[in-house]
Image (cartoon, rainbow, N blue to C red; front, side):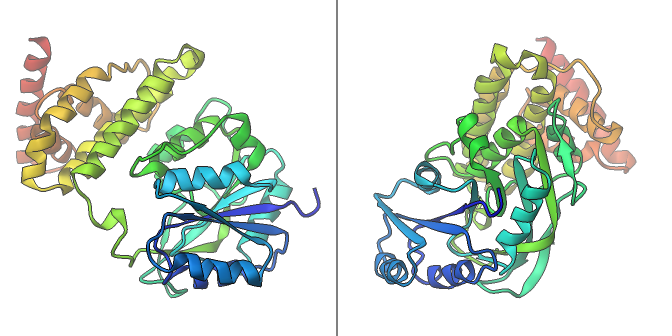
Length: 358
């Protein structure tokens, strides 16, 4: 495969102010064998007019128009018509480096067993190339990392990676073989996609050069306006992983690792989601969290994580059936070196053990 075709899928909802500059970065690629599929997801601004001009300018830009169905459906629409050997997701308010596709394809050609090449992402405060920071890979770059026993799911817990679908080069055959698609109408859909793609991938590779400029200055970003609905999306993701993977007899040999990932997601619900929402919304979701955690009866039998993270998981396993407010406190106290907090956590743990027996 000398110069494989890359399908760049760009969902776009009311992106008229951004999309031209984004497409400029696509058209400036040093790698020329690409197609850009822009999915206009029911935009109500002048996105359609802007896209029509780009369609006339470059025949490699394809426009798909649909009623507003959300980011997941827009990406799925792009996957459905993609002709490329590889698929690459780009958000309408972000930019890619001129050598982005060339860099990622070079790794895909070098490591032919690799299902996903992860690009390196720089953050920007606006729709520009002015770097304000980086999203760390966590894992080694420039090599093919095996995943025969789903160990990648452990690696990304111990050395966290940002869960994004964009800026990764996926083999189209890998996506089709495993019937991968984004769950419709789900906020934080990348969290579930991240789990599923790492679960099925046989090898991944992480590149070393910045290929993507992630606009964290967009006030419309869901990550900047964390609410009850965001927490409920994480609950949906946990329930999906439990029902679709943990309870699936086909994946019986991987139950331990799926269980670890479920516990890590539950910890994220409390330590990241619950922590951020307002007191009123906390009261509204307390029973939702408790009912979910009572339903998720995942078991652990082995010590696989490093000792520090294993201790956090074991602590949380004891308290995850009591009030979420106490769960959050226990998470915080269990990671503190202060004696008073250790004592407080001791009492919370004892209380949780009594509750678990009742």
